[in-house]
Length: 303
Length: 251
Image 1: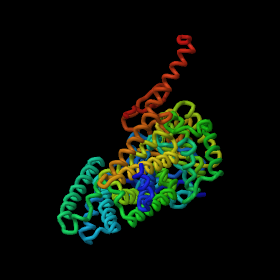
Image 2: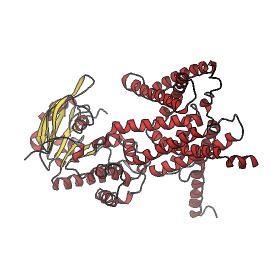
Image 3: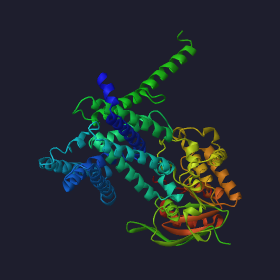
């Protein structure tokens, strides 16, 4: 307890918490759209495909500058996203096959490069391996501020284009008929999605980033039938997961952040699927039992 | 006076095969026109090509004498009901509001006026009691009416509807017909992809018979003849008593 109290007082921890809170919020919100656009798996592929970009960024500059690493991650992440879309549209392969192929190829190359980096004299201290499972607590203050700022920016852009994103998600053809630039909006959304994945990988890790994108969104879907509420609830769940995961991983050195963020998000998901009003499995059971009981009572079979 | 819709030499292809060849027709103001033809005749494709939703190979499309531009907001569109995921988290009123997005413009939210128009439009299709209902909880006919209400708030001059009568109950069919007649009375022009040959003469004053090319187009009494239908449907026509025709459904 005392340990947690001390930790919370540290300025860096406070920044890390704000950072993961904003990250969870942004990824929960963008994740809702990704889920409804049936693009959950693309987020996963982009996250895995960020790894080779990070390694190449490090190898080219020889230092661990977050900006460079994130640029590398964005380049390979976007490349993967476009490879998937190209393969799905131009070949006989279906999208799921294309995602599987691209995800494993890029991640495999990433691991090869990471091994190479760790053999370099400056590489073994680089801590690039923390990108695999994420290490929010170990982030330096400038990195955290960059993550928080970028997450805030993504949030603002998503809110500005909320109405348009909603329409192209529900009915892209109608949107086109209204004269909306649907391809440009699709491109913008894809860029936002890649961006949130990329800024999240240092804190959450490439393997589990997709879970922070999708798990809050599927949990939120259980609580509401309105898109704006779903987006807000999903953002809230993402933020809670981010904060709790960070707190746990700050308890000791070497505790990765990503897995604990994902475990928290999953607990929220299980609670949602069981107890959400109107849709939760147990809520429905209780409701059915109560109506049955009432029917029987009305028929005079039970007192 | 210029016709609201004037199509000349329109050709559309998927990959290398032409789905629509050398389409040519015009539709007068205030008419209700049915596009009729067998499955795979390119009926939906024709609508989508006119709206610029799919690219054309060649051809000239004029709406009120000008090349079609979505920005001019002259055209309203009712897509096939099956084209969207009705599990989407949104209400009937919300879907209707989407029809206002063209008027609202960027960066703004729907205002009070948009809200009032959307509610009024739901009322016109008899769905005002369901405004806040989640769309997956509506019946097929009710979903279709929501789509119609969304097109109504677009406040367009020309309406394209893709099979609005498919899978709807009798009440909805009546509501749609009432709506089409209202639109016609307001001088608006409506083009409907239609499947049911038995109701063509009752509902529509103009027809376009289509099978990859235009077999015939014009006033229903002149165009909707057995001979022309034979030519459109090939051998797929089956005859009923009293001169009624029906199409063998191959779906």
